[in-house]
Length: 139
Image (cartoon, rainbow, N blue to C red; front, side, top):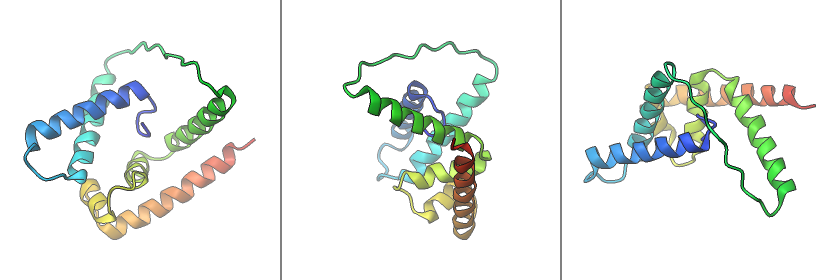
């Protein structure tokens, strides 16, 4: 969701990722790093296809019980997604992997193809950049 900004697309990509994982690695013990790599590749595949297609989506509206809270949460979420959108793709990828909380820095390093210490530096710098972007967005 952090990478696409679209709930329906995120759900489709997640389903595709699990399908690919179980078809190819069904008997292998749980490997979150591998699953994230497959999901990232599915997103890249989608992005390549999307360059040549136009999408028309309708957003389904729910009738929330607490509309005021829902509006505030959505606004903050949009603000965060906008801030993430202003980061470089590599920074977004690393932050998204760290934000899940399920992967170690070593696993993230394997997914991103860099050293563990480089991941830590990139995460720190990306967080600082994001903080600066979000502070500049405040009214």
